Amino acid sequence: MTIQKTVYPTVTASADNVGSYVEFKRPEYFDIYKIFDCGQTFRFDPYDDGIAGVACGMYLYFVQSDDKIRIYGCSENDFYSSLAPYLGLDRDYGKINEDIFAHFPTGVIQEAESVSRGIRILTQPLWETLCSFIISQNNNIPRIKKIIASLSAECGNKIECFDGQIRYDFPSAEQLLLCGEDGLKELKTGFRAKYLIDCAEKWQAGTFDGFDTLSYINAKERLLTVKGIGEKVANCVLLFAGEKYNAFPIDVWIKKVIDKYYDGNLDITSLGDYAGIAQQYLFYYERYVKADT
Image (cartoon, rainbow, N blue to C red; front, side, top):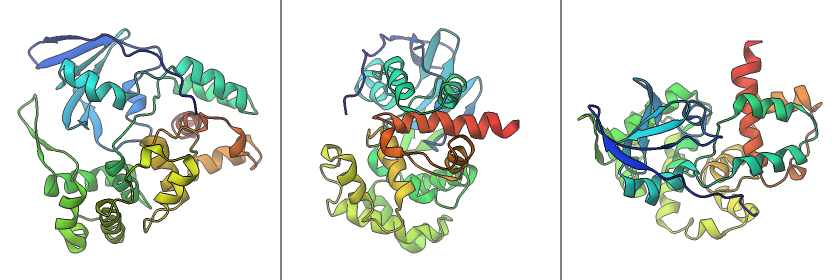
């Protein structure tokens, strides 16, 4: 897959009464409210005039205006070394959308993109994404967020925050194993506790070494060796952490999309290199827009 790229935005660093921040011109296809509320990450929530949460070992507060993005809790060096890649700020979504429109068989994708514009696929840490989507099984988003927050507070490392509060990074595989299956169950993970332990054991054994070099098929096969990971979770991990933008997770909302707009028959293999990004447009469109009509 040839990933359509552009350059990272130029940031300026400053500070105000809230704290230190970096600021840059808002890209055309970038909306913090849609990015952090489309089901791809569970560490962010509304905060004051923006969105805040944990990523890249930092507690971050995003404030968005029509033409600027301001991020508190991040230095200029941190921005370029870890946050810009995490946010996918070198992805050319204009070119990506051209490819999507050329591959999808009906006009609904254009309408879905127009109302979902600003969604951008994050490049999240593989380990955290694996665990997060194991936890997501048969679960709702508020409960997923609560479990992940509890797991991080119990097992993860403290993060120094710009607002003086204490937050926690996601625990490592070693930290999770030290918690044990019974300890994980006490954190309300339920039947998923044994899956998390199996995932951590496989991580420690090197099952995911070199994962980023694997093809989509081989990477998915590797994921399916973990207990409790099926097709949907595997495709979520591939899309949200593996930069496999052709991965197309099918949940209840996407099943509804396929039945409603494609007569129950959508050939996923024909949808091109960015089918997974289109999936996010369709998911957002159906869940947040059409569900209210």
